[in-house]
Structures are given as C-alpha cells and as structure tokens.
Amino acid sequence: MGRENKKKEKSRLRKGLSIIVSTPGRLLDHLHNTQSFTVKNLSYLVFDEADRLLDLGFEEIMKQIISVINERSDISERQTVLASATLPNKVKRLASLSLKNPEY
Image (cartoon, rainbow, N blue to C red):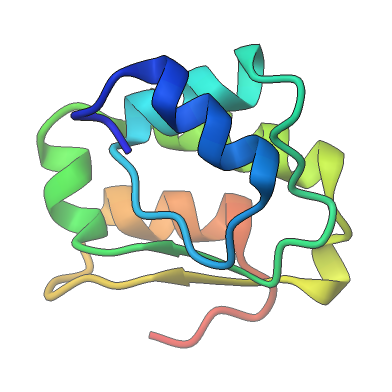
C-alpha cells in the first residue's frame, strides 16, 4: 500500500488480507481513517530496514503505528520484528517500545 488509489486499498482491506506491505505513512493513515481495517488478529508486525526507516525520519510515525496496534490487538499474541542491518540507539529505543525481551 502507498502507491495506489486509497479507495482501492480500502476495498481490499474491507475484504480482509493475510499480508499487507505498506509504507509507514499509508499504514498509519489507514489505521486512523479506515474503519474496516482491523488489527485485532494481527500475528506479526514487521518493520524491514528499521534503521533505514528511522534515518529517513519515520521514527514518530513508527511509534504511532506501534501505539495504535498495541491498543487494538493482543500484544501477547503478536510478534514484532525490527529487521535492521545495524543497531543504532534509535532502533534500540524503538525496540524498547514494541518488543518484550528483545534479542539483538
């Protein structure tokens, strides 16, 4: 998600999806504005290239995504993955918000 028309994306979200690949901004937009987008059964939340996303200025958006998903889903039933080639302090701070017993 993120390059297409939002109406088409909303239609797909209404039908239900097993996997969603999205830009951080569009994911947060759908979390806030698409009523049919539910994350209560979310099993995995993956931020690939987390270090790069933080370098590009997405830290606040990623924190908001994690916060919204934590409010709407069972944290104990979800795995959160922060994939990163490096572990700068920004990634470790984000890990402390979203991971239980992180492994570096």
